[in-house]
Amino acid sequence: MKQIIIAISFLISIVIVSSCQMGQKNRKTTKKGNKKELKIVVPEFNADSAFLFIEEQVDFGPRVPGSEGHNNCGLWIVDKLGRYGGEVVVQNFKTRTYDKVARNGKNIIASFNPDAQKRLLLMAHWDTRPFADHDDNVENHNTPIDGANDGASGVGVLIEMARQFHKESPKVGVDIILFDLEDWGPPHEKQITYDEEYWGLGSQYWSQNPHIYGYSASYGILLDMVGAKNAEFRREYHSDREAGFVVDLVWNTAADLGYRDIFIDEQGGQITDDHYFVNKYAKIPSIDIIHLDPNSKNRSFFDHWHTIDDKVEHIDKQSLQIVGDVLMTVVYNE
Image 1 (cartoon, rainbow, N blue to C red):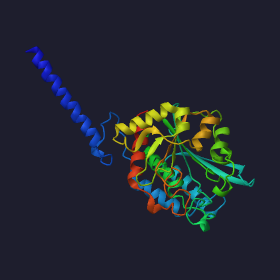
Image 2 (image 1 turned 120 degrees about the vertical axis):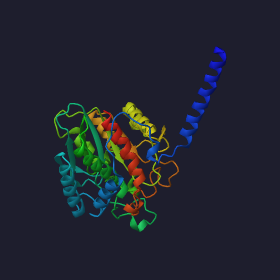
Image 3 (image 1 turned 120 degrees about the horizontal axis):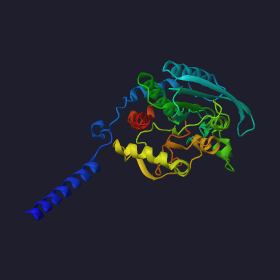
Image 4 (image 1 turned 90 degrees about the vertical axis):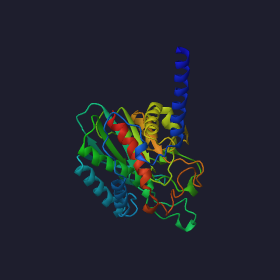
């Protein structure tokens, strides 16, 4: 009888495991009711609000450093982050772009729960590309882009997170840094030789001249191009090499929330982005959550990357919701 009971229990176990596996396979990541229940109560990220913040940035026009749109949008960002309880610092800096022209930039930093010893760093870039150098129409190659996805989407997600921090503070300290002059690398036609130092000029400056002397954080997470429809996020090379434990944390959290098919646990490309310089100079282990699709027509980025079609109508609220859910869960579970 004992053997029969054991056998029956074993068969029941197989059925339960098989059912769970089938449920896992068939689970739709877009339905919140399918999320794994977590012990920590996490404030609800609002994708509609994040989308509105993206629209408001784009309404200023291209945010190319030195332009009126850039200046006005910078003032708007400072006001928003301040209203949501952030201690805001604007780090003005001067640098040279690939064409040897000296240009002024502004890194915008907002600190939440500033007295907390343990700190997390959340990042995006708020400037836009001055050239639509990957547009199908060559006549548009010198046209500045709206940058709805690159990079208003990351900024929109982080401002919405700031709004939630103001309503219910996380236990850890959080510093949001919005870098300037990330995207003024040479146009595609002039990239005869690749020089990584031409990109991420704001993050290079901050990483070597932090807003607080000796600043450090447990880790950093960069958002870049997180709002495209059917977005896919893979493990970026520098992220894995310099901060693999952070990639594991974020991708495992995404899997727990039912987003395994969005945060895909496989190697993506090697991207020189702001996190690269934060790792290199500030020595803060940092990762990049960036849309990487090997089937894209545009160098594995989203189809409208560095074109005049990077417009707000191509932003997908579902993608924003997924990224916001994952980051909120990571922060509030620290």
